[in-house]
Image (cartoon, rainbow, N blue to C red; front, side, top):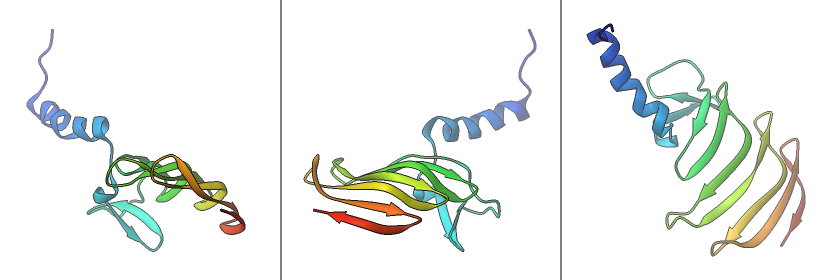
Length: 114
C-alpha cells in the first residue's frame, strides 16, 4: 500500500473542513450583485450553511432558501429563480406561526397576504 505524499496530506487537511462544514455568508463577499469567496475573483458556486441556507450558482442565489433567527427559530423560507425571489415566500413570527406570505414573479411582489 502506498503512503500519501505530504503535499496531498496537507491539501486534504485544508480542504476537508470546507467540504464537511460548508460555506457561510461570513466566508463570502458580495460585489456587483454576485457572491465570491473571500480573496477570489471567481463567482462562488456551492452550498451555503449557517443562519441562511441555500445554494449559490455562479455567484447568484438559486433554488430553495431558508433563514433562521439568532435563537434558532425559523425566520423565512422561499425560492430563487434566476437570482430573483420566485413564488411564495413565507415569513415567520415567533417560530412556526406564519406572519405573512409574499408571492413573487420575476423578483416583483405580486401578492401580499398577512
